[in-house]
Length: 396
Ligand SMILES: *Cc1c(COP(=O)(O)O)cnc(C)c1O
Image (cartoon, rainbow, N blue to C red; front, side, top):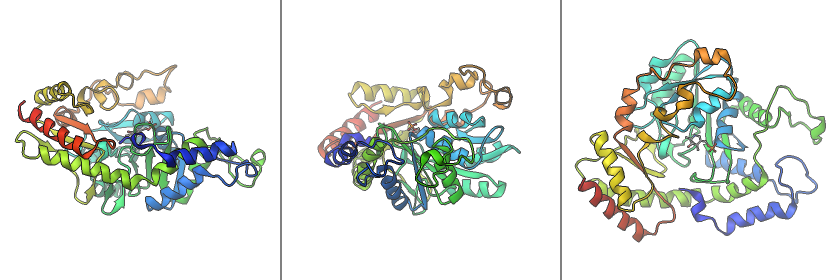
């Protein structure tokens, strides 16, 4: 990743179709659109590739999470379990609905620790949201049986893991709902965009209405549509959908390149004593967008990141110090700061994260480095990179 590395003729053709018709909106204007329905076609391509009954496109991955939660009736006072290692979008989506993000430890999978999840369940818990960070997944069987036991919804944030699988099922299709992001730096990009997949018809139809001001989408006259409930505007534009349509057709091509590049680098690092790799649960297949590994302690992980940078090896991240992906730097959440006041109930119910003990997450993340696997590298470049990386890490 990212998919923009390999933009080509197909992306241009799909976008040109939309410009030629002049219809940039995904709904209506049937007479003008010359048969182009890019968002609909992308949804249909997603249902097939993701082995899911329904797919609904929205304007971003964050919107997908928000709409997915709303579609299942999640709202004020409901608790949603999210990992300490994720992207800020996870808790943004939850808070946007007046629900409560409950942060929970991760384990060697770099995703939700099932034991910590079970310990965090209260009478208000409604959803468990594993986030398949950096291309690999949580132990979904374990999480599913916890959800079944407690009557909770399993919502997969597969924004960073499109194309990976678990027990033969595409990531995102295992839970009750799955979300993808197609922002500019993801494996498949629309520029901006996101998708919700589900097998549940009412979640799908709720998502479809909620993301378009509550319009019920019955009949051909938008002005005459009914509004069974409140909604907002999370629509994707046809221009963005057109880009994604070209890209989704190339998903398997992209995954093959990622797997090749990942395997070459991994093979070079495997003999190094001080390095262990992220755990991939049994039955899981990564999408190979990142190679994540652990150093023996935080100090050496930091040293490693600096040494890799100095050697000109870009794209290796030390998430422990990262503002976007790890709870330690989420000052706004920790101090409950918003524009205007958060609802008092939310403030009261939101855990005091300045006092939380996430030493288990710290243990894993402080020792972790994740290196981005690019699509545009030539095979020769990857081999050079692999040798260089191994040299740097061996000589720490
Ligand atoms: C990118 C991302 C999102 C949000 O996607 P946007 O399209 O940027 O809003 C959500 N979760 C994870 C894990 C992501 O990486």
